[in-house]
Length: 461
Image (cartoon, rainbow, N blue to C red):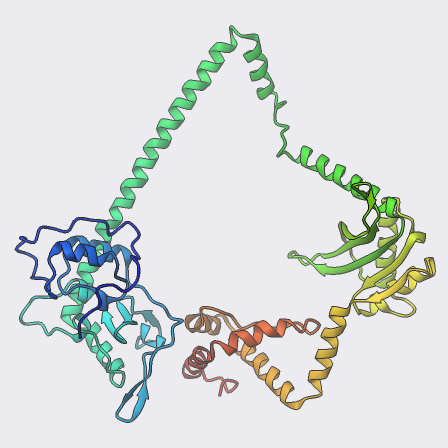
């Protein structure tokens, strides 16, 4: 089977724009496919060299360096094709990327690379650094690739302890270390640049100090700097706070000019577990636009307020105090909207009832989004199949989150989405929980199997 001469655009960007050694080099074997070094240079720019199947049979030193810099690449999210072997369907599995030691630990087989083009696996280091010793057995992992999925585990175990593989792995490691020294040289060079920069800054500083002795303007400027009198700028906190106050004043004017308004309020804990109350004012802006009245519904965020108690009494008191601070009359309130919590919608002690006592025209409207969430939640509880389905998803999350070791096993197999615990009041949170399982069924099953093999917890079985 001949290899393609053009697969995908160059993955090296500019790294492969190099001149290959002359074809007269004695150390290089003749290149197959009847291509000379110039043709190889043109072809290699258009080939996906992250796939070992596309590598030329003879790899020169320049290409070997670039391949080591690129390193072995994996795409664990692809769907592996199924092969029929002995009337049994088999395929490559991501679990083969790891080797289980006798003590139960797992180590990554960094050298193992799967080829999408040929549906075979290769040894990255053995293909890059082939052994020419006649007394060493050359594995197909270093040449044409391996696709014996029935015996793949045994073949990989035999290969990684072979002398040829160990020698190639040492050569790969030594070349990576030599290439890594170039980074150390760059860092040392950068240190020299920084030292040079600091040197000239000190020179400039002394020049300014000398000029200050003869120039009154420079003298005053340096004096302000020493006395910390020039630190006020547009990015400073003083100017930023002043700008915020100016914008708040303008928003307050717009709200007052509209006269009538509605209140939107909710509480939520922040990252420090401090309960925060957010207040939004909704108005109909009747301001003139090009000499014509253009009514526009607008919502203005007022502020966040730390609260120590989320009772209806405390929240209503905080709300009334905020309106008073901004000189907004509660008598002009024509509507209020909150979630469906008892502290908000309670008929006698909720925030809405307390505001209605202050202003009977402040009609209450519940949050329709949360109301829909609650309807869906209660509807799902009437279905035994739905309860069993979501209960199973919740159980999967509980299994993996029970310990850091189990979560590590989960992350080992599932890299795209994580299982999540949903919120009781937010139905849409179930979407993320279901999505993580829907598109990673095989990976989650593999992770559960490993947990079952490494633990004696009856909860798994």
